[in-house]
Length: 173
Image (tube, rainbow, N blue to C red):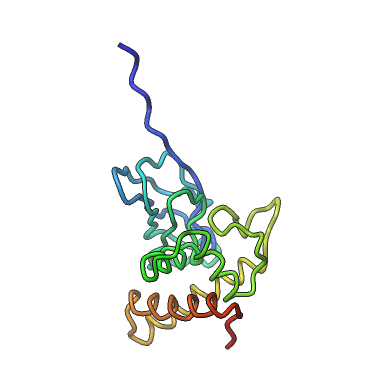
């Protein structure tokens, strides 16, 4: 008999600032892995949505208390990929349409792939993408401080992002 085929694994980064010590899992048949000191994970098995919890934001040295998610096929897990998952679940958008809505709402370059672009990459940093992620993360943090649940805050942001995408206009203050 042939030797067993090893499971397919993926690797990537957890970014809200790089998150060290985060636990990363997938939706189906997954193991869990922990990010290293640079927010990098590898050896993740399974399929479906990626989820990252816990750890420490190495840029602020503060504990990361939120939940970040990303669609299957992502190599980065960020506040913007979290919004992609929200738009998919709330409005049934596919990844391309969710990305388009987010890029329109935040006035981002349409050529950026939110599922694979690391805004902090030394070789090709993307300040606009980093700022957009910080805006979404900040809105979620402010909502939590105001007593609004993460689910409600994501739902409200989802409505705004979806509407901006449908109307093809950027969100303003």
